[in-house]
Amino acid sequence: MAKKTPSPPPASPEQQLLGELMDLFWQCRDGERNQQQTMSAASKIALQIDKLEQQIAVLAPNSYVHAQALSYQGYTLLSLSRKSKRPEVKLALSIKGYGKRAASVRMKLDCLEPSLDTVFSAYNLAINLIVEEKRSGEGMHWMNASQQLLEKIAGKKKLTKNLLFFKLYSIDYGMAQARYDIGQPMEARTILRRALSLAPALNKTDWATLSGIAKCSELLSLILMEEMQRRPVPRSKSNDFGRDNS
Image (cartoon, rainbow, N blue to C red; front, side):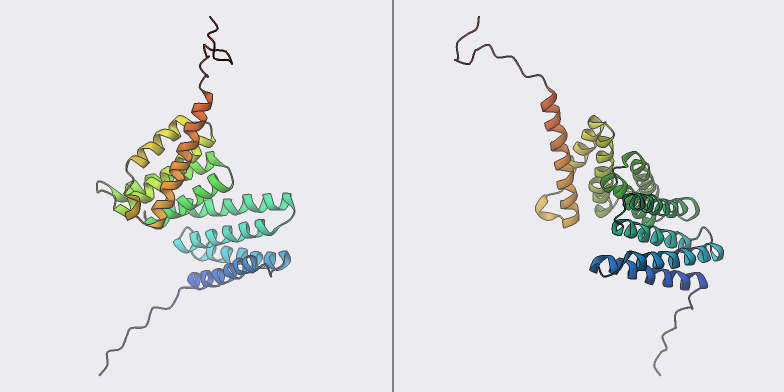
């Protein structure tokens, strides 16, 4: 007699609500990609997502499901922000969207067990704030949170190769970019040189690591060129005709 495969446990009410919320999120995201969705239609979806997030908050406050709901809600608001043609609406939606994403990461950091999922969530929030929004001070806070959590998870053990390269060429790059943006190029240069000194052979690494190394190299080159431009130009002892001026 064939052995029966046990059926998965039924989803909890909050998980069912999160599934509905995610379906709505992908409707909004697909509408943005194919440019066939009006702002009005997208706004109605955002309102439905807001109601579902509130229901999840009542059923499972400060849970992983609640944190995920806040994250998807934040991404939905950012999608609306990109769609809006009114600058004041675009800005308000962007601020609210990043606020929801920050609340999601904060909830994961404060209320849940440390996990790599939280490390990546904090990093994604940070790099978006630093690179896309130019809110480097705020982004640096979340990049620090990502790095500290990664170190806490690793403990006294060495990071695996993939996680080490993620730290060097994603987290450290983000920290260097933030330092550069807030007027600390020397600190950024130190971070980048340390990261690049540990770079693997370029022909034996993956695309993500290679891309990170390229970004670090580009930023370090920019910092070094700016340093060269600030150096005083030595005065020549010869005039335009090559004769000694003395």
